[in-house]
Image (cartoon, rainbow, N blue to C red):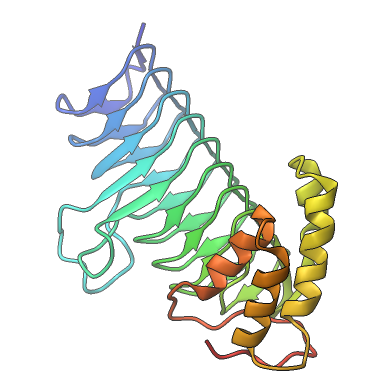
Length: 268
């Protein structure tokens, strides 16, 4: 049974699933779609073409779907899609896409967006991603499954964060971070692999060991980046973790890579 508090303002055109709860003083716009079992606590504001997956929870003072912080935005019919069972804590802001981007901002399933996190226009967030308090994503950022973005960190526009990567708190990330990588600092350098995260996610020990070998080869000082990529591919082509890193580094991007302190920024 859906419950809407008497002080909430829910537009008649909004689509609410079964067993939805809308708390006091929340405002739900006309084009919003809310899935089954979603709980919207008090004082939340949800606007635009925003879809929230079943079982998600939206905490007080979250702002979802309002115009992005982009002066070129002109009310184009862009969207936000949030996957099921995602927790959106207090003061989180998520902006819709833009005509210059993908016309869509997406957040996957089972994500945890902590207090004050910001997801700008056209961001693409995978499943099981955690944004710690105050983490800020500029426009067009993509984040792979299982990544953790530390508190008060900032990700530059168009940057890609690979799957299961870890960004330390208060870090500034101006460049792509490889899958399973760990970056800490301002401006952040690659400081190793997210070994703790890999173990917690249950990746096989042998795969992790080979990934560590591949990492040392990739960011050695000898040869060019492409030569090192070819060498790693030849040695570890059957390891799915290494393969994911290689595919990430070979794919098109407008950014360079986060690298260790002792390695020059590689060109593609």
